[in-house]
Image (cartoon, rainbow over all chains, first blue to last red; front, side, top):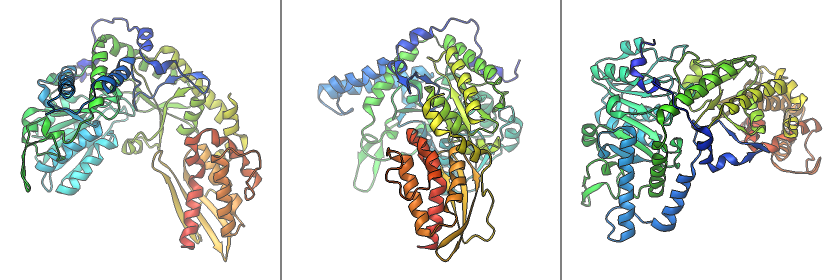
Length: 422
Length: 147
């Protein structure tokens, strides 16, 4: 048994209920379209997931019957919109297992959420010589915000190394932690190789050193059952659009005592208590961090997405996606000259490969002509590309509606790429 | 295999991808520029040796997909011996070829016939940047000579 398994209860399931993929597929209208004359095989879920009819209908319904600005409206539409907006906050807290809706902040997405933490929390606590720890497998959105605040405050940034297996080198992490470590920013699951990081083990070590833990949950929230009450990270960020919801909306969870001590990031309407010409006092969290008219329709759409996925049997979903990615790994390994990056890691259903002598873009174009949507490139993770000595990979990522037949289509498409491109 | 794929990956392109021509640094280059596609990480260096008004040698190095590498390779062949103005005209004609749906040979006066193999790129708009990456670097290198 993997010694870290106890920190990954989200992957270990007792029974194995069946996942009715045919029924789920019927909920996603886009899956019935054709691309280049072939049925769409959508394997780019790590970039964005498709939307179920419930989400599309909720957006329509909101604009057709409910559109109004939230908060302080005396009229019926505004009150309805406000109630719905705050109801989605409660749903989000329930979905992620936060203790209170007041710990959930609506943001434009994971990127905006991490920038908020970096600028507000980082900007107020970091001093020259303080240390921010990141990892070699971070998405640029969990690196660049820290670089910006490090430049402003004089803090330094170091990266926890990634082992060949795809996992983090926790022994190195332990050595890197010190009395000046203030922030550990780590992804829950890699957007490139899918590797799942043991957040509880990392958080225990970071907290021992007096640092807070910021978790990029963009790639874990769609694939693992998140329970923030049991996770003990200090901040957790995720995006609605990877969770089968609309673009332009994301969630930031922060522990209440941390949020209450943090200064605003952006100023404007909605985040104040009282405004004078030269100074203002601020509303408590979460409003303090939601300046301006929020993306109301997107929040409503996110609510529909959360209700939809909360209707799923997540134990069955996780087991199904784990089956998919394990089978994809096995079958892809049979393609001549194909290598899987970070092959040893426990992973969410995200997989990156490279092919000897074939650039990922060319393979991606061949797959595209078969209606197969994958992503080719550096996946906004250039340090991880360097770590594995590649410039780009071909990434397949599977969601709730993907099938075993689609894995066969992917493998056949790559065999064709080998034939066409030599 | 689809016709579009046939059109895109013609054997000439695959041959230049496998064995790129003029794939070396030009030690006595007159001008040099780098082409970088931040979206995909592809990067090429282009070196030109210019005497008077004429490009007398052109080389490149770097890494990227078959389309970008073959395009760079054939570009170095095609612009060698051309005047600076002619090289710019060839780029303009090549850009038209990969972006506009013209009939065969129409409106491509300056386009050397061998570059016609890139007409398949049109069906894949996302690949236009691949096909033109080294050409943009070439033009930038010329701009540095003729500000």
